[in-house]
Amino acid sequence: MLFRVILISFLFLLNLPLISDDCSTALNFRDKPLSLKGGWLFLRGDNQGWKDPNLQDAGWGRKSLPDYGKDKNSPIYGFHWYRCHIFFSDNSNIPGGLGVYLGKLRDADEVYFNGTLIGSTGKVTPPQSIDFEKKRIYSIPDRLVVPGKNVLAIRIFSTTKNFGITTSPFIGEEEKLYDKIIKEESFPIVAGFVFILMGIFFIFSSLVKSKNHSNLLFSLFSIFLGVYT
Image 1 (spheres, rainbow, N blue to C red):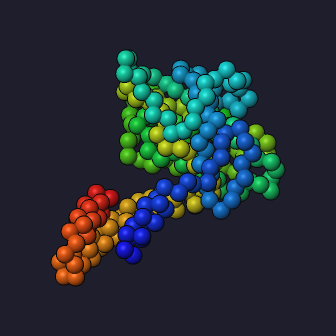
Image 2: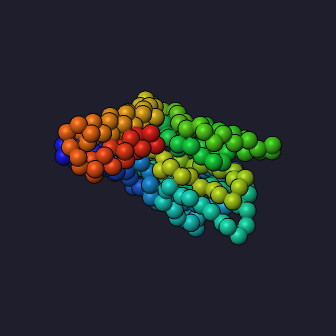
Image 3: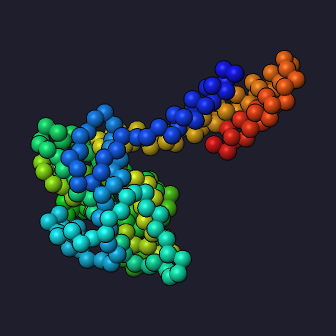
């Protein structure tokens, strides 16, 4: 019974929401990076002027991220832009050493902060190249961050019928963003061991202490879940 309570609690913790804010709202940095989920502006096509923080983008479409863009009827080759307006109330609200985390993208990307290129992965110009496995973290130089409105612009080149940003971007202190990656990569390993140990415990309990076959089924499920994780 105790281990079942632990398992349920563990699965509950997996689904706890992270701290998040939307674009076009004043960001309030707490102890963790902020997930930028809502309020993104989106437009297909390409224009280098779209990185400009002063661009009039009121006519752009709106999206929430993650965005699993698909079009089954026609290939979606070419460029797509996302823009996020970020607001800081004053200098005291802006931590130094900021970065932005995009996770893995299935397209080539360039990322701009207030009109300045801060990072890219793959190649958006011919011949295009894509890195599917790299988790993107780009540094935001302190000199680019200003009180009031800031603009994060993402230029993506898609080569398939899929496009979009499939992870909600995070903004925060760069060191904490790298800590987030370490936790993401180590957590499944630790969780897998926990489930396997629970499964072994219940197998032992079923064979030695009890004839309750439900415990045996639960133990096999735990081991399977641990291996899968």
